[in-house]
Length: 379
Image 1: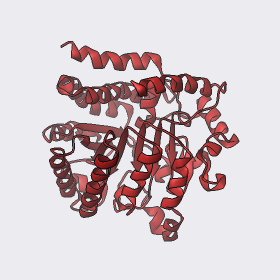
Image 2: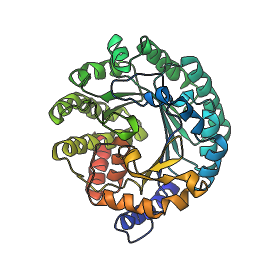
Image 3: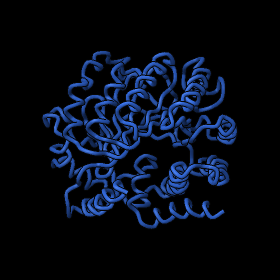
Image 4: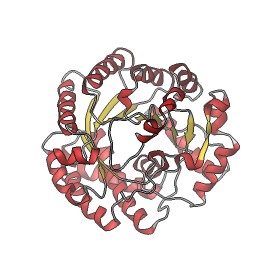
């Protein structure tokens, strides 16, 4: 109830902030790309080339001391998304999470992984779970190995032989951990691209047999963050709609068997798919976008973005230039300019993480989510 009482005033402030009537307040959703280092050589992403061509770039990543100072300047967020590169290649990841829990007090922490560094991942997961259970027992942790296909086809898309076997090993390890760690959620996620869009039904059927707590799909996008703007990776709207039809059917069929928390996330996902297809077809913002208001993205180097789609092209600034004071940057002239650009409709995208927040702040879309949740309870 306390979260709801806190969230309602934020929703009002965010609406006013979008029109410049009030300040933006603090975001409820923070994504932190802790590193751009990655062992994958994905067809959909060229982020790994940043370090290959510029190895000294790693030395400019934020230190743990800098991260602590930034988090102390922010205040509470509801969702803390960790991203990369490959997050578990950052040796101090458990300490970053401890800092986030201490200063940001999130309810949910989400970590995707390519599962390649399997021993390092298992070690850090054990440290993180011990930290949460002993010091922050109310925090939900979701870990999502990436699964873009089955067997060698996954390895081909991800560019690393043997990757599929490690994804399965990690996923089954996470499922075993759930017997003792009730706040751990083992997910799987697929990036729908031109290389797998025609076989999503096969992948979805395979995942359904594994017993994942959730299965997330997102569309492959051209983003400056991933240095892939020239790559033809995004499926057509027709192909994407066909690909997710089976997945949507599965979501609706299995909804009644899910616990309430999972019904909420799945209902948001159903509405997201409709909006994503419409956005792709019409090439415009279908509902108002609150990027740079409800959500923020922090790079390994301290840049703050409204979202990862705009990324380097429309940065709000760098925290090192603001003495690591998030509020100073968040309320700066450059940040306001980026928000005005977004409000003008100059950009549009089906970015899942941001769209979920947009749905929460859009009455008609939120009503559809509530309908999906509660109509299943009546069955």
